[in-house]
Length: 550
Image (cartoon, rainbow, N blue to C red):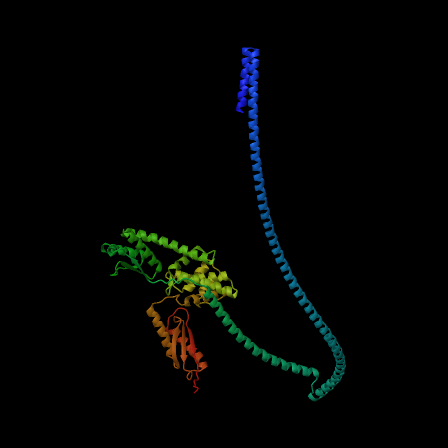
């Protein structure tokens, strides 16, 4: 390619030279150049052709090689495709064989079921044939029986006619013999039947009455047991003293003050006795009024923590604590009313109810007691179909008189009833307060529920606390009273003194005398022993016959 370019350049140069040196000479040069160019072009063309041939041969060889490779790959792919197709066909064949096998199995099962069905149908047909034969036989027998019955009916009708005639004849003969008409005989018979029925009714009535008493007793016990089991309240017991801890023994001197002025001011403001003895780092507050004792305790704790103890400061702290305690009592009353769902209560009654938080009876916190009684009364009322809310209200306010018994003379039951009547409580609530200790008669079912709940709460073991010494003395007293009667073999006070079980000698005490003995012991206990609630007296008499097989 480069040679051709050189030749062309030479031709161009020759042409240019021809124009320069003259036309003839330029013609010669031009021809010479053309000849050289043609030779060079031929040579170049031959080289190009030879190279082209070589490239064509190379391309041919490569094409043949590619063709062989393609044939080889085609053969390989063909073989691979054939193998995959065979594998696919084999899998398909196996799948079809499995399906065919399953179909054959299903077909076999179906054939077996059809065979069993055919056998069942054949048996059923045989049974039906036998039943049809049996029914035909029974029908024939029924026809025979029907004919016999018709014959017997005819005979019975004939006998009834004869019997009627005979009865008429006998009736006439009886009237002649007895000297009474048929109507008179019927009347006499009815009178005798009435007497017999009346006697039977009396016996039956007595049985029903005994059964009813037993049922009522079981029902009452069930109601009380269910009610007690459903209620679980905290038992809060208080004492007559409170102890205040001191940071050190030097604080005792500051509490006493110069010439005892601080302790005098404190006792005068609170109305309690402040006992300062040899007990290390502690002083004792004594008072039978739990409200005063609580005010004194809180006030003293604040004075000790503050450190400023003098008469003016004591009066200031005590007055502030009194206001807080009053607010606390009101909050306690509102909380109890909210828990019980009792509404529309006079504010003065709320104050009195709150005061019961710091009131105790036989060591039992009265506010907790009336709350427990309210729950119990509501449950009992619900069991027997009475007004549950009214019974709960009656139970809550039945001991309201205890809030003012230290200020007013008289029984807390009567005082409470007057207060409740004054502040507009319902008649059932007033009657519950007045009658729960038997001072007046019960007028409503709800007041009876409240009294029953009060007895349950007071008699529940652990509800009321007493000193160990007094408790032991009371138990010993109960047993000694029971054992003092003739014929008593042994007496046991159980259930924290709520029951006394008495074993008697069977040869000295009869069954009838056992009941009288229980009554005598209960009366003597009522006269000589003081106790909360009630005590059950159980007299046990048994006869044992013992022998030995040798």
